[in-house]
Amino acid sequence: MKLRIKITKDDSIRFISHLEYIRTIERAIRRAKLPAAYSEGFNPHLKFSLASALGVGVASKAEFVEVELAEAVELKSALQALQASLPRGIGVLEADLVTKKTGKLMALTRGASYLIKVPCLACDWQSALDEYNNAASIIFAKALPKEKYKTKDIEVKHFVPKITGSYEEGIIELSFDCAITPTGSMKAIEVLQVLQKQLGLPLVLEKADILRTDLYTTDEQGKKQPLLNNHD
Image 1 (cartoon, rainbow, N blue to C red):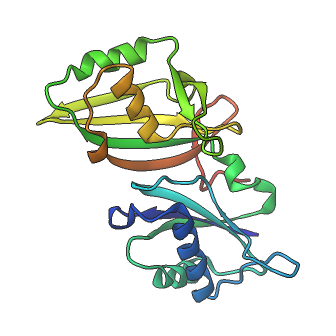
Image 2: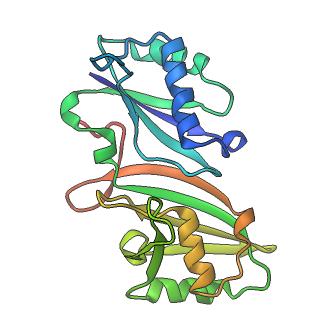
């Protein structure tokens, strides 16, 4: 049995690293005394995972944690204990108990939804979005983190087929879904870089307010499905 939990990473802690976020959750699981399963060997560790890494500076309304359990729990009391053990900035939204046959959380995750607010003064934002949405192909040179100064060309439209937006008082509000595949994905900031460098939008990237609003899986037809309550 596994405990699958939907949590937040609020704006107040958006600049902590993914590793520190993981460590904070792990400490909370221990403090809450959840009957989590441990690996075997000389250095046993908690069997838990997150659906998808979140970049530094990005807040989220929909992160997912999966904890393998050594014994059954009562869902409501387990979540109350976990919330009481988590620091300010991480909230428990909902959860469910799932069986091991549902598959691993990371493997089930197929995409992320984003809402971004970014300054853009005197810009023709609608023309830029129309150009993006109508393009058959847009190539982005993605930096390879383990190979300094090297890049890999990726097809942006494969990951983000469409972007919608609105504009008010010097701020563009952008919304899009980004696919997560076994071979990779794109960061939200990389999508903004495409709009800035390749489509000419004068975005103030260092002031971008990036919020991940959802993580989801897909069905056989490719339609979005929730990561909770989607099991047999």
